[in-house]
Length: 381
Image (cartoon, rainbow, N blue to C red):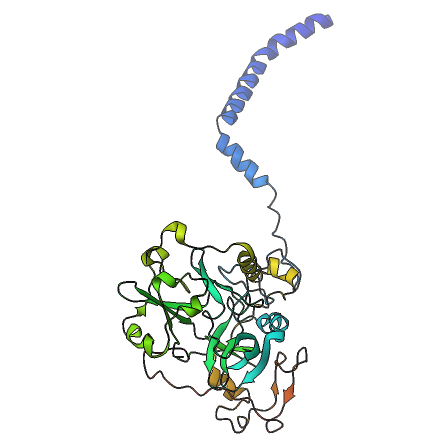
């Protein structure tokens, strides 16, 4: 048989078998195309595992979040561009600006305080009354006439000490004025007083002070609140007694730290309410800038330390750290006491280690419960 005939015969015999194979392959391909889930499952099974999360940053390495403490913990809701009121920088950042105008002392009742010189402020000085006036910018803002007034009238607390007069306890949070307010029922008179301290400084440490301090009110007719010489318009002494009986604490619609009565309640039109301008605005701006690390550091301030206030009360702290609560001897068995920050009498000095009996003890206040409620019962001298 010739080769050409053999090839033709082979093709005739194989044709039916090839046709069945093509049909089988088409069916198989069609079934595969109609099953995308199977394709996805197969692909998923062969996908590589996701990359593992990067390891945590080594201790001490910057993470780009300055709201973290050195321990790695976070202050929830805290503004990283801020200071805590009990930040230790309060003892150092205000020392040099205030030193020429007064004296830093260790008071036996209120710890580290600054006392303005009588030669600077006068013998009858009263904070938020003498040498200054009120302006308004969402709340009352005290504008001091003193060159150094940007600091102690917007930071810290003032308290009256028998034998010393008014003294200032350092703090590190800005406010337009650290005062509390009161009004009579008809808004005819307005009263205010310096807010009491919530902590004291002992050996460079801020210690909670939950002790009642009687308010020392001043009262002013509502039409004189924004007087540029408001200190000469306030009512004091025996003349204030009838007013004090009528004045009640002011409770704002939206409670705030120091919110006073809205000027409109006192009869002022919007165009009659003074706002900080000129030199006053510059002093207020400086005070505000000192309250934020982003602007305070350029003014010579220290960065925030972010330390927690001791949970003990002032008396308990004194007892466990070698201070006396009665002015006699250090607490027995307290051992040596390491002060974490310099005292006011030795600027820049390192912490001092003192054993009981080695030196006269600091005196922390004894605690006494309030004997009367706050309100209009007290008046300044």
